[in-house]
Length: 302
Image (cartoon, rainbow, N blue to C red; front, side):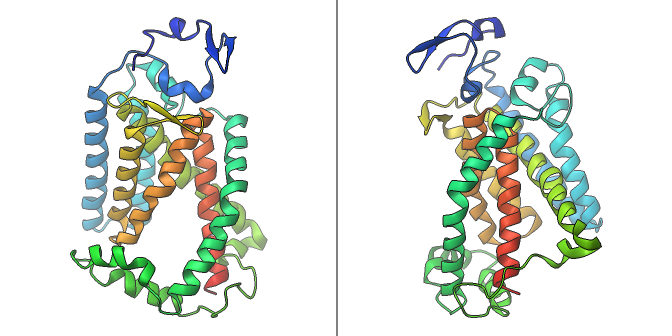
């Protein structure tokens, strides 16, 4: 796959869905821009590995967890733009700079996040309730592959112990007896809910998407450009590798193999990034999924 050598070439008329257009489709963002730089992929993987190893080492030194996480968030926001400080065209294309660390707001991205949430969240809720109705009644057969792999690691038994703790307050019914929210959301006369939303968006979802989708995935596409479309979005090996790294990164904060399941929503985030052309789409969907999970946990395990 070949990219145009400059922005002027990218702006030339082309055909899209059978008609000539003069402006690039946002869904084709990964196919435009400066010439490929395969070395960017190795650099991004090395930077990501160093960042997570450093995060783990700082944890061993006893630094308060909140301060340590604040440093990680700052790195997610600032590192990509700093690395691309001499390549502003690429930074702008990847939405990691050069004018600021927060991507420019996009209503298109917000619409895509909302649309996908309407499609995905209802079946996810039903799947969540069905899964824990079985697990909390002692049926761990669904987790047999994970438990088998876990048995080969130092974390053996950790998932079963975690589920046992989680299921203690389980009420035993498929449908929760009431819709509940986390206790901290009710603080300050309900303002705690606004704080929770702000934290999810700006301290969790957005920095993670800026780094893992805007920087890491885009850099990996310099080595493995997408060669096919999935539901209208150019997706390839780079999205899979970025999602794998994203999932492995979750083990740094908590060594539980179940956290590797973040690989699957990460693929959805990657698709949203390329389908919408805005990092706000995966960031808002990511934050919404986390908030929904918080409500499901509070309602199912009061």
